[in-house]
Image (cartoon, rainbow, N blue to C red):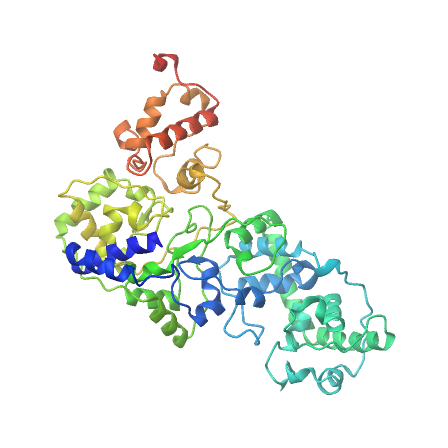
Length: 540
């Protein structure tokens, strides 16, 4: 609630000025009774609040999303791989809920498939028995006429599309699980499911009927299954080093357990792994928001919390759905307009960015720079002038979850830098970092959050962002080098940045973000990495 009021105060000040802003803020604050945004039925069905803060989480999506505890007993691996690579709506009875497209590559999809296929924990310690799948000529009539499954399902262009197209069942599902769900649907389906139980276990007549149904469904998709299976085998040969452990990291990084059931797996995010949606009303213009909802493009290349690899997936929203969500989120309208700068001033700022300021250590600009924060090439399209100004002047306040430290700028230079970024309106799109080549990780502590992107989880200078820097980040495990550095020098480098120590200016100054006690704790962390003491002379 406090955070929301701070944002609202800044927004009002930006619109009407400080004096009137204080009056309006006091009046409007009285009206705030909840921290989350007002409810929105589409957002609930899509599960927006299961990743984003500022909006209530959805229990609906948790009911609709399949239980993945037994994915390896249920799905055919070839189908699962293809589905992860190219999601499509399969179940028609879950309203507007759907599996979004995370833009996974072939090796990412393979890793996730291997992980999911390793899960076989059926409900209630249930076991799928090996049952006889028989051939026959009566499969279609049994499904369509005798048991009237087409009252809810489609099959061979007949039936009602209220649930799942049965033509895909043999492609999607393993034959023994398909048999078992027809025999005992109550074991797997939630209590509100209309799927009836027609059969009794250990009944030879029932077994023959189900066996013939299953064989018919398997034969329907046999040709398509063979194509997908060949594709899957080709991918496995192309990426022989992919493991299920890589897939486990990807599953956690995308916060899949926020929607799907999965027991015994670590949750990386306690509450959220995506931005606060209440901030859109002061942050992004309507035009950008609408386009982003239509076709989401990466804003943070390696996760909202850098290193976690979280992504904004594409829900393939309809025009009507885009209108609903954009109206609900609300695009920002700001009276702050930063003054345009001249070509000479533009060159001046670019020289500062290249040789003096730390911005490009974390951000890309025109294809150059780090991959920790958002690409700055199109920031003028994405953010309002008012937010750009505040983000540079007071990043800790307007972006409290960001690791971005405050950079002290000369009062004559700050307006130039703000205007420069407000004029960046490139249509160039960023790409997410590959989650196999850049293994995502959970944020365990402040070192992991702030330093590991460059210096690595083990302090060896091999963080995911190191590849994009012209100067290799410091290797804290180099005992011979680190034992020559006084603790005071390490403190000054963290506090004032690399430039003041004749190191890379892309190492930012953390003194405006961290307390002295925090910086001292980081110095101790460096000593833990190198397992060394400072030089004796520095102890005098």
